[in-house]
Length: 205
Image (cartoon, rainbow, N blue to C red; front, side):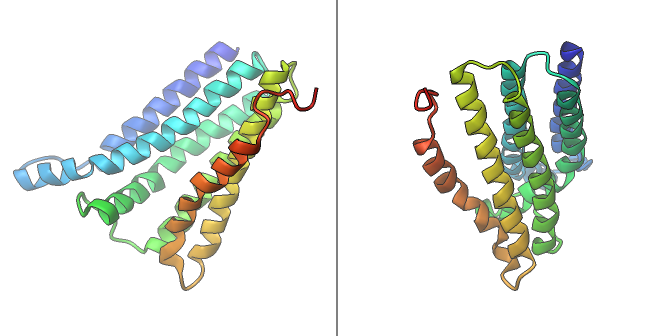
């Protein structure tokens, strides 16, 4: 069962990456269109990294949880459902971010605050689901090292979800265009937690 579910999950993530690349549906008919498409490469790289981050987390969860049970199946299917929806606001957010930093690519012509509200909602839902997967892993028969990593991953994904919630809250204020900057705090918050967490699982022994 877990093998077929993982194959389905891998295929869904691969499809999401495909949508990320070709979702715009625009043809390249002249040099200007080609340059615009090449300018979108940073946006694709950003979106690809985000999708890969969630996929790797699921692989890590499976390595810890093994066969799992019905709850793991439900959470995995929820993650698949969310990534297939999330890829569209991810494309828009990646394009906006890429144009902001590089001035290249197609960019995003809509309201940035609304974009970050929609993007943040998807990010929070996926991060919370991933945190729930690692909470589910803690229900299994884990070694002390695996348990320490499962706890650490659960907290890290909870930090990601909480950061997304703060970004959504900022997007509703008059500083809505600064919602993206909230995510810039992640290296600090995750770095501090990672430095303090018992990754060896020895402190509780």
